[in-house]
Length: 219
Length: 331
Image (cartoon, rainbow over all chains, first blue to last red; front, side, top):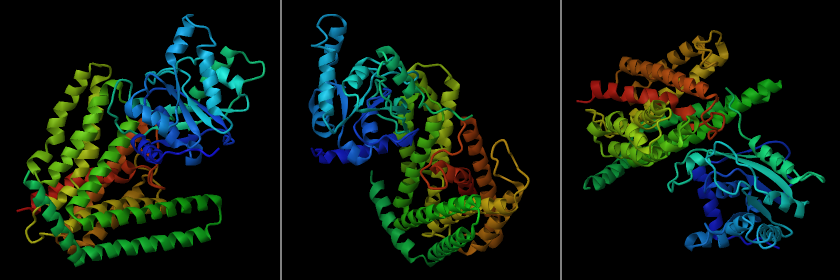
């Protein structure tokens, strides 16, 4: 399947790189370049656009962000999400009502996992933010379980940890105008779920893999 | 707003006079000759380098030379476009320098709006005021108006943690990156009797002496450097490099008197001041970098680091040179 790249995509990627001044750093083994799930800390609306724009264009063409349906559901945002980013829009309310015990897993979180697995297909990659929501940037919140279930369902896909630094300063939660500082994006070495690894152990290991990429101040 | 068309027309006139200014082209020719010599020397050094360490040093040197070609070409092109082009270039440099500075200096969530003002209102306004030649306003916009505005805006945001440090850091960034640097293109608006239409040469003189002072201090330091000046702040600055660089750059400046409104002795004195302040600027910005625990402000210029690493000396030299010229040579 050839990836459908919207003509606007290149412009948006260039703009995102300019505003975020993103510098890309790689730690450890280079990912094989096959199908990947990029999972990152989440502090800003710019996060996925910047991560997406930092990928080489041929990888970017087959990488889709997983985003919240409630946020990306109207007007230009819907156009961008559907046509430019080919976003996988998931229903956060479904997950919440399942967790509250109102509906059964098959209608809630598991349906979302199926949706993501289907989106991966045979060639595509995903960008996900397992914290589920944006944080302040000081700490990385515990991961939701979707990453684990998805990884179990598609064990051949590489899980690539990513740490995004300074985007919370460029466009923090609650602001609409960006301050164009320089951001740093670090790709870490890929990981996989162990055969016998349990959910909580894996999620904690994945979270630690993201936190480890935080640049140490060399004072 | 009837000022704008005037600026536009002056811009065209600058362009025409810039193209006809033979002495400006002699200066460009000199820079070109320096670049050719540096490229040849670098090429010969790379060929004769035997050890890995020597190859690493010459590779870095050649990367710096390549970057000098690009920077010189951009600067020469904007000088020829005239006042508008030069102001646009320096305005952009101010924004990029401020970006590197704020990235390095910790700010808090409550500073977001103040930073937005700094980038998108205060800095452009500073350059607009320089562009329309309103000396009385551009010389106080940041030291007076921004000085009052910045802490007020931070206070309104309601976060008092490290309040004084945050206000001081933002004000310092605006002073260095926007205010000080804007005095370099402000040389273009000075009205010097008998020098009308040639101010581009004065700006080129400042930038050339300032940057050559950096280069010559580096070269002398590499050749003879033994005694460190401030090892805790900047390990590469030595007395030998400092004295050799300042003296040779001052001699170079004296030799370029014919392109300026100065006599040879005055040109030497001005160059000496530019060199000393350039050194001070580099030292102060090194102090900030050490405090933040980094070597460079960025990595956008190959071999040099960030924009602010390249122009730190200019930030200190430009306002003092501007005021010396204004006090002694403007009628």
